[in-house]
Image 1 (cartoon, rainbow, N blue to C red):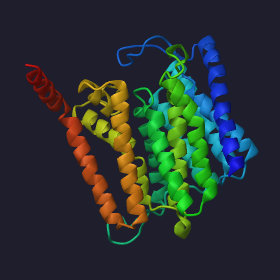
Image 2 (image 1 turned 60 degrees about the vertical axis):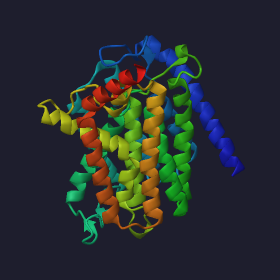
Image 3 (image 1 turned 60 degrees about the horizontal axis):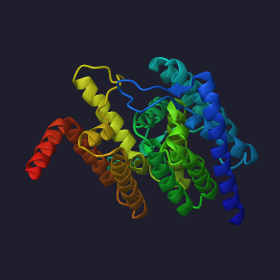
Image 4 (image 1 turned 90 degrees about the horizontal axis):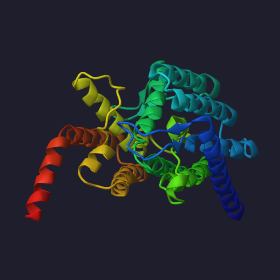
Length: 355
């Protein structure tokens, strides 16, 4: 236990060090995020959070190659994703090319690592749903969805880091309960290497040292999440959690992505067209500050994950857990659809209270 604590502290220090080094390199090569219509931050911010996390994980895996199954394959996948993400941060690559690379990586994950979605569990109450050959296609879709769900939610300082910590902490807890201590420890490792990014991203060391995650980081985190969820829920009788519990551990990024894409399609826009209609944008239009928005969304995500964990521990029937998730998503969709009316109503009430 003491050795692991020292190792985690060392990893946190390594992550901090890489961040400070990469900040300077990023400014030199122009890997920075500049303000525009959708990005309202001040100054050019280095996009090195994901690169730092990747290097830190590679450092850890080099000395612990047996900590997770197919560690070499996982390392190769995140290297490729981070390279593509960094190129996208620098040159704005087409989303079609990014999806193509993500699909290739998911195919490699299945055929080289044997990691795939082969069962949905008993989510309809009619018995275990096995996917057969459809599992390959759904796995590709799931990997792309998870990667882009965490990509799309990265809109305000600290949010992506906070939501990923909720997911990894919840997953690590369930893995430890199931006796899968190596995977559980890897979740703690991920938290340890993400925390330094959060401190700099929130400006706790001064605004001049601020960094952003970049697409490199959001894709790395999204892929890591789906990799670990598949490892944990698709292992037959040795699974640490049921497939439906995975939905609750990533509920908010998943709901936000799905609701936003549905709304874009309904109004005739491309589902991949950027806008300012995400949950964090809405809360800010309601008058919340960035920190207040971060806190509220973090608590919502934590509540979702906690309910999923409770359902897993108490063995609440999967059909009930799935229907609960669908109901929550529908409420979420209705909220986003009517957010303009709610914002106007809230503004009117605030004006009346001041009279």
